[in-house]
Image (cartoon, rainbow over all chains, first blue to last red; front, side, top):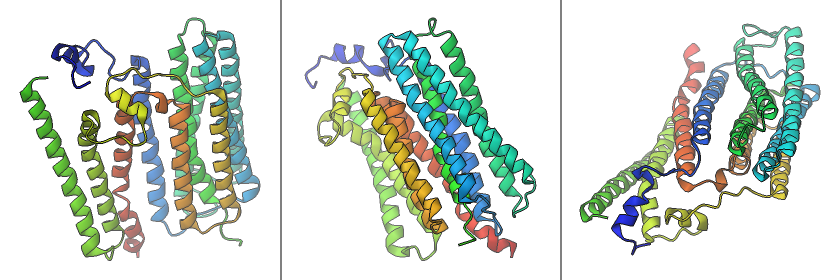
Length: 211
Length: 183
């Protein structure tokens, strides 16, 4: 490497133009940049939640282990499994097996839909309990505001992800394998965010009092 | 490469290494003189200094790897890529992906178990965050293929995110004071 001639170094320089410095296409790079900015949005919300929680003296912890925590654990399982099927969809489309890729994509969509339906069912339950973004029967009203805004934004991401994957699955013959991989990046990101929402919002809201 | 350009690179790396050293010194000085008697604020100052030290150190270290002054002890592919070789952009095998999925499930089960035994809130928060960061790293490295990407992409994404997240957390000591302010 040290003995390469000057011209060769400048010609093959990563930032000299005409090459892909990151060795990824522009779509994939764009998705990565979007993921970075979006993870900062979620981080801002989660840190804001932690901030008001630490600064509050009657923050409620209303979720009983059974059924609330078990229920959200099942939701986590659905989302994690859909991530695995997404990995298989990406590797199938890399092999050029569009049919298998479509099959795995449909499996991923089913996992996402399961998550969404369970989540909506849970929201319905909490609303029936009298929890609102501005008040709740247990304590600090900010609990509802943070809960609904963070899980709501995440739910919206899952929803758009399902639409995105459905589009890719329908038109899979027109898309390249990089397109499938990019949609996979988005889906894994949604899963990744849940890996922080689930412990912070659910597990830390388990009922600490009765014991 | 022209001689002047080479010198320029050495100068820039020296400046960055010096900045990194200064940040490290401030962190050590703070720990040595204060020993956290002033509470969380000092902890955050130390954290920020260490973060800056790491940030400034990236470029000189990479340069040193490239020149072969330092042997990268653990990452053979990274060295190959700095040397300009083509990355083999294969992902992991199916078995490996299933293994990662199982690992994620096990970590989630551990988290849920902590909630089941109603562990003390602060301790639980620390353990949960640690486990979540491990899970996020697993997802990013294997499911999102970051482990199989080029080093330059990883270095663009990961340190940026870590630094920005740390910057968010700088505001945190205020929230502990909020309770006292309310009286």
